[in-house]
Image (cartoon, rainbow, N blue to C red; front, top):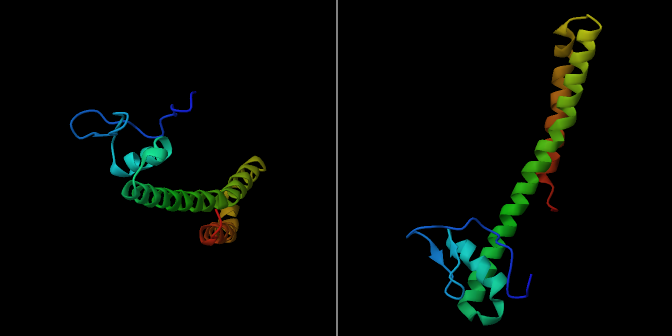
Length: 126
């Protein structure tokens, strides 16, 4: 790609509700997407107000990504607990012991998974 071209980062809008870029006429669905585009594609030609809008949009995007990462780490923290329950249920069925044994493992396993999920959720680093 040339220096003036860039990969599209957002879904583009169509119709009268679209917000077009005044420099390249590329349409965007949200003002924040337009502000991010302006800062990433046309940074050298921005005024002070546009640079401030870009900085705010970038900070909002980084906050959203950090929250998304926390949620994904919390969900992944539950996976070992679910895996242990599924494996133990499979083994108990394979050994023909019935599934009632799984109920003995469930509280501790789910508590461990919830603790891991909470620890990942509370972690501050991205």
